Length: 405
Image (cartoon, rainbow, N blue to C red; front, top):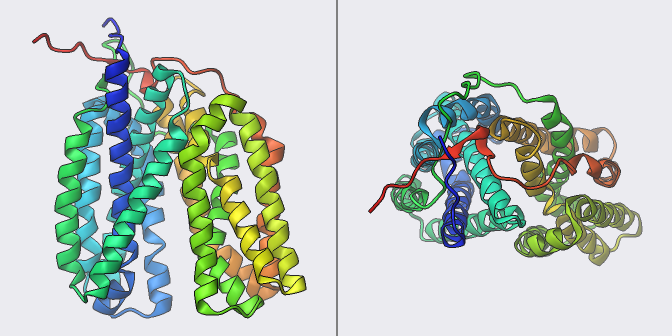
């Protein structure tokens, strides 16, 4: 099958379409997160039981993501993304329907599994568009995910403030986001395997190249998870800050991450992924050091500045890891699935690891570990140097011939 060359207009359309998909994916996450207290009350679970249940989305994602490459190969990238994204948006309703701990764990497992598979396919398509445009877009796409999460969170906060039933809220959100997502999928690149292409394994383990790239992503996501879940606690318990100031620190961290991702593509195009990650790693390490020092000197402003620098420094790392994975071998979707599995695992263990270390020592020691991991970005950024951008990315797919009008 001969490859069709897409013109710039079609590639721009594909870029906006996949950006919308990223925003929809993020909006589901934001919609869910704001209603967790309602879901906890409805399922009648304790805080400890809720903590167990909230591990199941990451477990489901880690188990299901290796399946994504085979699904994309069998149905084509566009159809696979359309189906998996619809499953993910509709899965939003499941947790709020769960009446007890067991059903909540099952619901969150399915929720995470569909999220992870859609995540792999949409990132692989994003890498393909980036390759064909020959300029960085992955950081911006993840910025759209953050924007979607903020929109979903804002809508969820309003629904919670109005006292609405989360089952109704999530049902309405699921229908709206499914319609938007399915419509957006019509504009993504329609990539299909060549006739002589061998199908990937149904459950594909990550290639070796993805393990090294995933290790860099692991460091960034560990720092992100630790900062998101523990920054407010750090300011309250270590520095004695008020609840409002502590919450503002988390907001500042999230905001710097979102802004850095939106602006990151221009920086990446100018300086390249390796140099960008090294400088980001340096800023994140400096931020981690400020957080630790603030605990010793008792300065809230220093700690907040440290968390803001952490967010700024690690913001573009995960998008660049996905982009590098997509260029690292003959099966980008498989490599991206491997990197995504590693980063999801990091996000799963980071909050509990920080808490365990803090119980044994202190939160300052915990963030000393975060600082050491962010320095790993400086040391190992070179593994992201995995070839230039080129077409023919997603599982060696080629676009189907466009129908003549």
